[in-house]
Length: 423
RNA sequence: GGAGAGUUGGCAGAGUGGUCGAUUGCGGUAGUCUUGAAAACUAUUGAACCGCGAGGUUCCGGGGGUUCGAAUCCCUCACUCUCCGCCA
Image (cartoon, rainbow, N blue to C red; front, side):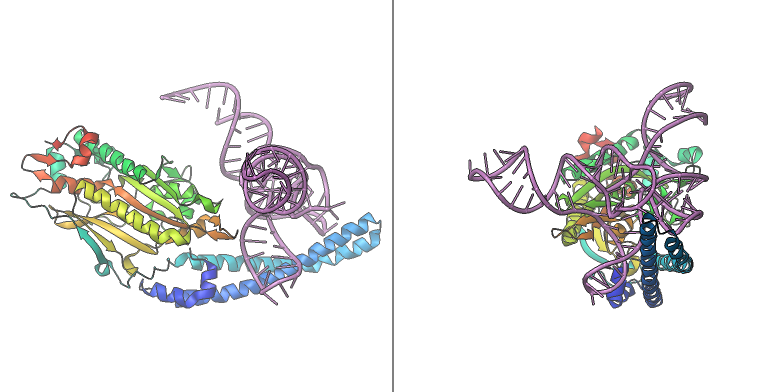
């Protein structure tokens, strides 16, 4: 959620920024400003009435103590009218507050100045590209055939047990999952991230904190009996560790990582790129999350990008990095880098990581603040990224490193796997 | 699932109708002392909002009520803990 103060003081800049998302927010912003002006007016009036009532209450107390009963009764009578208008004003003020908040919820984050305007993924900028496209002397198989051939993942069995999008990993397929998770966690730890194993279900307040609720309810599985949600990413529990926290300024940077399964309903995306591992309802991911002071956010983002880069390089995968254009940048993000690996058999790029800075957009909702050196309270910045999401990495590994009689595993994984080749 | 206790500032923990945004301790900050540090001592130290400011308002788990006045009384909801039962 954008800070109301930002809209008050730099409405034009906000509007201009949102234009890069192809959004004309003029009407919304004007409404917010209008309601905010009313709110301040009514609020001031309400407060002065409250002050008056407090004053009278004090007088009555004093009068009673002095035994002046009649005067006290007189003073009491004065409150009736004031209380009536107080109640009316209170209603109005509360109404305005919810209206303003509802409007604020509809505004996405303002893109960073480096972000280019654009409508869709077609306008994203490729900022880096590395690795080589694998060459084959035979027709490479798509990963869903490789997993079947070597009995690595059983999609049909998942359908039986649960439903589509819940694969069953087995044998070397299961070991590969475990090896990748362990490898990613070890790398994150080396980079200074503290590991967490958070709960996989969260309450409503946490969902609101990171912005999944109230809008994007359709994305999460909801356990209605207990009113809890299955996490769509470790970002939710990890970032919420710091919900309602006021940090001293010497605790930065805060770097957290965690492996969790992620659950996504993917409502409305049926039929699109759902083959094999491309889109699942449950998948594994190692996430990195950072809390930063505003001065350090840019550097932190760069470090995270380099971290993800190094993972892909160690795995030997061809990849490219995109800076998303305004229209393709997520609602809460002010700048996002997507990492894609090339799938040799599907002949397309697969997104394997998304690294974003949110500035104060999340912390505003989370009430995640810190004390500056001169003891002012300020909202902290949050960032997060996948490092990495497993399914498409597995897909790319299987497809790109396949040989005529098996799949060669990258060397960094050998010690984790206990084998070097799937055959 | 049954019974009971609790929720107060960064933390611990007092407060049962007005002088309470709240005693006290710890922690934090500044100072005195010290070659330096520790200890001791002294002072200071919650947050949000409105206002140029003076100042004002709100907040003692959430919501509602009683009252001139609520941390304190009443209703309601949520959560936490303890004991018993069941289970890993």
